[in-house]
Amino acid sequence: MSTPGRGLHGRVLDTLGPAITAGEYPPGSVLRTDELAQRFDVSRSVMREAVRVLESMRLVASRRRVGVTVLPQTEWNVYDPQVIRWRLAGADRPRQLRSLTVLRSAIEPVAAGLAAQLATPEQCAELTECALGMVANSRGRRLQGYLVHDIAFHRVILTASGNEMFARLGDVVAEVLTGRTHHEVMFEDPDPAAVTLHVQVAEAVRAGDADRAEHLTREITVGALQELDILAP
Amino acid sequence: MSTPGRGLHGRVLDTLGPAITAGEYPPGSVLRTDELAQRFDVSRSVMREAVRVLESMRLVASRRRVGVTVLPQTEWNVYDPQVIRWRLAGADRPRQLRSLTVLRSAIEPVAAGLAAQLATPEQCAELTECALGMVANSRGRRLQGYLVHDIAFHRVILTASGNEMFARLGDVVAEVLTGRTHHEVMFEDPDPAAVTLHVQVAEAVRAGDADRAEHLTREITVGALQELDILAP
DNA sequence: GTGACTTATAAGTCTGACTTTTTGATCGCG
DNA sequence: CGCGATCAAAAAGTCAGACTTATAAGTCAC
Image (cartoon, rainbow over all chains, first blue to last red; front, side):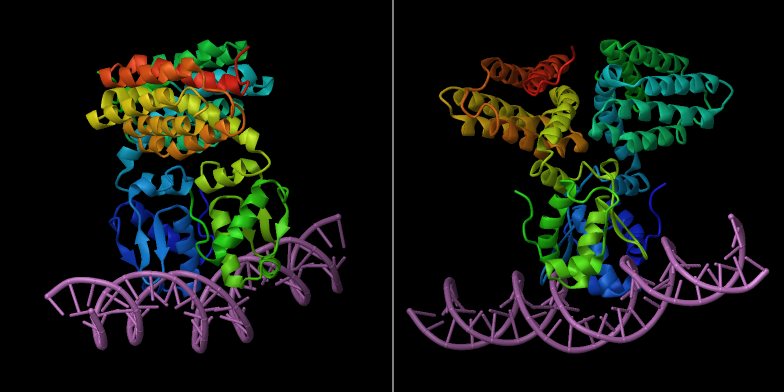
C-alpha cells in the first residue's frame, strides 16, 4: 500500500509513528535522540533523520538542551497520508474514520458537481464501468469485488473534479471504504439504494447535470454518515 | 507565521522547497546529495535531513545509485501546510488560490452546519463579536481590521465544527483571505451583502439552525468563487 | 541478440569529535 | 531574604571521513 522499509530510518518511523499517534507518549513527553538511537539500535544520524520527519509532520518538536517533545494532537498534520495510516492502524481508528467520513460528506458532492462539468468521455466511461461493476457484485456476498469498484468509482469522481486537493483524497476514501467493509457489513450485501445512487451519479455526470450529480452524491454520503450514527437530530 | 530558521536544514528547505514547488526542477530531474550539500555549503548529514523531509512531503524520492528524483505534482502532499505556503509564495499562486477556494466552498458550509449543532456559548459569543467587528470595519477602507475579524470568524466556525480535519484548515482559509485582500480589492470596501451574510451566519449558529447556517455559508463561498471567476455556466 | 558477470556510482550507515544554545543552579550583592 | 548576574552541564546541532550496500549500466561470452 504505502512505502515500506525505505531504509533504516523508515523502519524506526514504522514503530515510532504509530506509537506517538496512538498516544503512547502523552503530549509534552520528552524523548532524547541518543536514547532512542540506542533503543532502536541505529546510529544517531539515522535517528536524527527519523526525528526530522516526525518534526515535519508536527508530531514532535525538537529543542536544544530540552529534547524531542511530543506535540498535542491539535498540532499534528492530520492530512499527511502517513499520519492517517498510522492513526487508522491504531487505537483511535473509530474516531479517525468518523472524521474522515464527515470530510468525505463535505468534499464528494462538490467534487461530483465539478466532475459533471469537467469529466472527459474516458472518465465518464470509466465511471459507468465502475457503477456496472458495483451492480454486478451487489448480490451474493461478493463484497470484495463490490469494494474494488466502489473505490474506483469514488476515485474517478475525485480525479475528474479537476481539483488537485480533491484528487489527493482518493486514497483516504479508499481507506474509509475498506475499513467500513471490513468491520461492519462484512456479511451483508450492500444497500441496493446505494448501488442505484451510484448508477444515477454516473448518468448525471455523463449528462453534465452538475446539480443532480451533487445532490445524488450527497445522498450517498448521508448514507455513509448514518452508518456511523452521525446525523442531525 | 510559520517556523523560520530552525537549524541549518531548515535554511536549506527554505530555498529548496520553494524551488521545487515552483517547478524549477521539472519532474524526473535528478539531484545528488553531495552536490546539493556543496551548493548550500552544509555537511552531508544536514543535507540528508533536508532530503528526508522533502521525501516525507513526497516532493522527491531518493533511490540508491540514482539520486534524489523530483516527483510530479500528482505525488505531492498538497495538504502539507509547508507545501501550501511554498506554493502560495511562488509562481503558481493563482492556481493554488483557486484550488483552495474550491476546497473552502466544499468544507465551510458543512462546518457551519455542524457548528450550529455543537458550538459552545463561548464560541457563539466569539462569532458574534467577529461579525460585529466586520461590520464596524466594513466602511472607510479599514481593510486590515476587516480582514482580522473575517479570518477569526471563519476560524471559529471551523473549530466549532468539532471535526479536527476541518479545524486544521483554519490556517489555509486565513492564507486565502489574506491573499484575496492583498491582491484584488485592496482599495474597495468589502461587499455589504457578504458582511450581512456573516452576521446572519452568526445568528443561525447561535440559534442552532444547522440548515440555515449551512446555506448562508454556501452563499458566502459562492461569492468567493465568483470573485475568482470560478462558476457554473 | 540474450544472458550472466563485472564495475562504477551514489545513497546509506556509522563513529567520534566538536560547537552552540539553553536551562537551571549557584553565588554575590543589595 | 530576595533578586539578578554568572556559570556549568546537558542535549541538540554540525561536521568530516571511512566504510557498506544496492543497483544501473556496461561488458563479454555464447
